[in-house]
Amino acid sequence: MAAPLLESSNTISHPTGPEFQLAVGEGTYVLRDSIHLVTPPPHPHENTPANPNPLASTLTSATSGVKLSLCIVSPRKASPHMHNVSTGSVRSSIESSDVRESDESGELHDNHRNGAGSQGLASTLSGKVPTFGGDNILLTVSAGKEGAKRRKPKSSLLKSSSTYISRVMTNEGLNKRIQEHSSEGLFAFANINRAFNWLDLSSPNPSKADFLVKILFAKAHVLCHDTNQVTKSVGHLDVVMGTSTGDVFWFEAYTQKYFRLNKNGIINSAPVTDIRWLPGSEHLFLAAHMDGTLIVYDKEREDAAFVPEEVNVLTSDIDSFDAEFTPLLVNKSVNSRNQKTNPVSAWKLSTHRINELAFSPNCRHLAAVSEDGSLRIINYLKEQLIDIYPSYYGGFGCVCWSPDGKYVLTGGQDDLVSIWSLTERRIVARCPGHYSWVTCVAFDPWRCDERNYRFGSVGEDRRLLLWDFSVGMLHRPKAVSISARQRGSIVSYAQSRNRVESQATMPYRSNSTLTVSSDDTDDLIEHPVESRTRTAELPPVMSKIIDDDPLSWIGFDEDSIITACTEGHIRIWDRPQEGVNSSQIHLPTR
Image 1 (cartoon, rainbow, N blue to C red):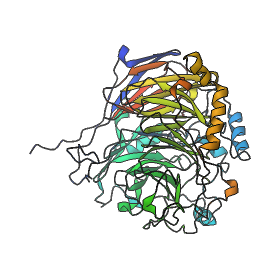
Image 2: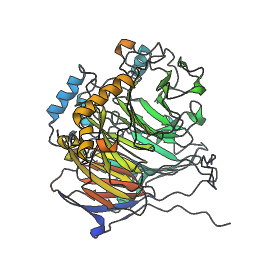
Image 3: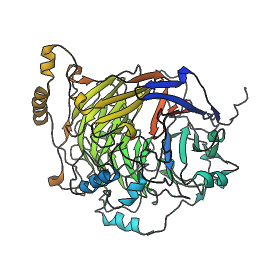
Image 4: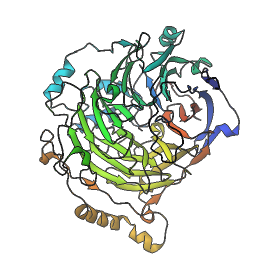
């Protein structure tokens, strides 16, 4: 037998030349660093579940491309939510959202997994973020037990005897590196198969490629992760990880301690495809499982075998769930009186894999995309589904909100980026330009204002695309024949939309008596597929192949664009402008 591959160290390089430059209208982006995360070899005890592909010849664990969670522990000041939007305007928008609960247009409070770099503003407005389960005294009392004391996990990674963890490696100069860069440095957490890396992207070359801590799992791949922007401080970083076995890890980076939730799939055994902290919460996070279930966990609660508390009146039992008749099945409400153990809340959203989640900037709505080709908008505070938008064809793979909350981007198997207006509740543009599935979309807040937006996308075609659009541009229909243009006019669309809403939709009411009353419930609108002849098309301003492997992630900070591919290449592209303060960072609303 051939000797097993030995793991080597991460490497960094600095390629130069025209092929490592991105020419856009504002100037040229130049590749600064190319970091390659080493891919660990399979573990002998790694679980190999049956491959659902009937043509597959081998058994493989569920995996995902490299994703990043970025964090500045203590920035000098809050970074802007939108370019040229003052902090005062942002604060006014958030405060007004308290009295305009259904306003989706302008609250600019971002506690997203990768986009909560504006935590200075968040801390200033603490208490303004809507609280999930705030009306349930059982959750309120539990959350207040610790008071000012911040709870940390108890199990040490370095002394762990768990067979689930293979090895933990720490940098020899860990304490010194943390002291040098923890206050304003840019930390990154990155997954690659069964390895989880904590990186310091503020370090000078070549130490930037060195991990601060690396965790190697024995029986699972890390598929997703998120940092808590509420609890972060100099000396404390809460991270949650979702794995291919369904287990969830709460990891405190500085003390290198952890707590394992949903152990051995006691609540749900399906892999965790996406995970994120609830906006403004120190202890609650939401996990999307591959079986179409959304579960809210409390990192400070023990787990117990879960039996659904509620079964929708339209179904005889939980196994007969049908999304056509039951768009959102509340198996356990956040207002349940049984809150001694996890889960805090559980919803059945689909029978297909949920690929990505994104909380709105106003911290009241949740966007979810899935393999069934649906974008779902959920009022998660009320546990209520309010909109279902279909893809042109195929499944959706990624989703993000605009910094002002007016628009949602999706990308997927139709090779398109789609722009949806949440204020008008319709698709406003399709963006062709990719030659394969779109894997990640993100807005660039430093090139966004009240009317103009910049966003980027990456895909399995190895391309990075940048796009510009304005509010006026979105209302211009695609250039087609006169008759088609008339059919696609704004007036005719408004008339057809009214007919669709009145004839093809039905209100949905949660079956649970513990949720909000029907008087406070909005009607669900299931939108039809819009013809391409009636939808504006937006061309990219830049399109270029930037890697040898499919791309899996894109993010923006004030002085660079960051991309990642499925094989572990993290690339940092310097912006063309000069005199940028790198301490301010704003990351994508994915």
